[in-house]
Image 1 (cartoon, rainbow, N blue to C red):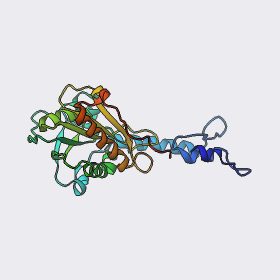
Image 2 (image 1 turned 90 degrees about the horizontal axis):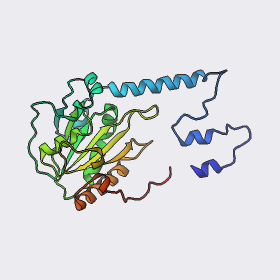
Image 3 (image 1 turned 60 degrees about the vertical axis):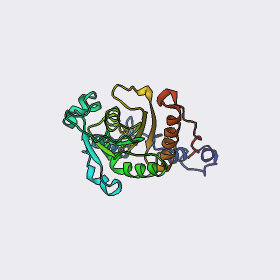
Image 4 (image 1 turned 30 degrees about the horizontal axis):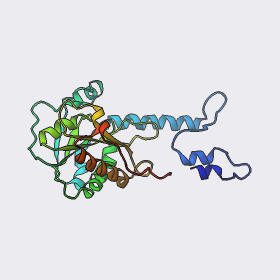
Length: 247
């Protein structure tokens, strides 16, 4: 990006065009009188609508089946989307009566709708596949797909399955330039009551504008290996991986 900004611009060219090409953020939108140009205003409204739609889109678990094969499905204690959005605490607990088979595995993988089921539809299968390819020798419980789920629901799922670690792939809160961003949360020794400081997060998995599946899977696999050696995750575990190259 620095080299691009250092390049001389031909006379008459828009001086902001190089910066716009390097980011999806809204920069130098221009103005029409004391307001935004109509085109920029319509783009903003379309992005806002896409973010809202991503939050309210229902998770279609069957869309994941061709890539993931058979999986287990669970629901949180939030009975519907409206309740889920109003009561985050219910999204952290399994619905009453949920039963999962004991697997006693090294790893449980939970695919959760979170605040962007769209992100799950578009990126979860590719990331799960890339991650499992990088974990030879790890025993993995059946993948669990969770509806109306928050990150902490993975603790209850991991404990029920008897997994030594849990990885939660979850749709992140949509932004005005990223309605399809997937986050990954890793917790060692999952059990209800774990707090956010006991997790590691890899965010913004959304090729081609964010992390690729390979980049995210490399980081998560390295963190899992380090967590197993340390016997802990979160603030006790630092990501010692290489810095990502500049875009």
